[in-house]
Length: 141
Image (cartoon, rainbow, N blue to C red; front, side, top):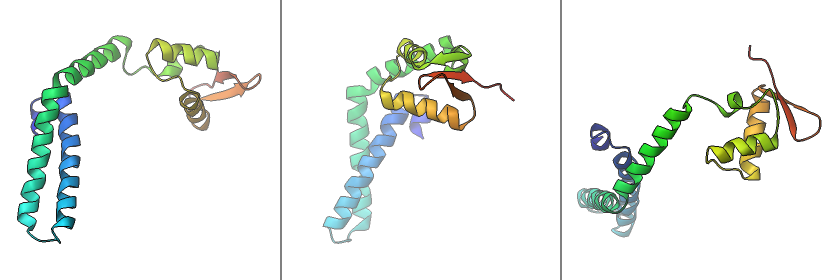
């Protein structure tokens, strides 16, 4: 909550990760202590989470915040609400989708491209034409 109050995306991300690490440390301590001293175990878990958060912020915080800010600026400049499908021509092939994802610095693995196309097909947004690599956008209802 402190991270959201500070309006810091990096602090929010790192605090959530630190909380998971603290929880795991607490559970391990709980099991090793024979389920005794619950108050001390809780305090230990909180200490681990806080220490982890402070260390991660010191090492990664500034760089992560810069990258997040740049990503948000790029998304805003390119139109964050624009979907990839809206940016493709009515008839396109896999190479058009790959080129668009390269331009937007997104993954172009066979699996990621296949997943996108499969989701669009299942949603009724595209249909396959002329073989395996050609597609046509369906009219929006």
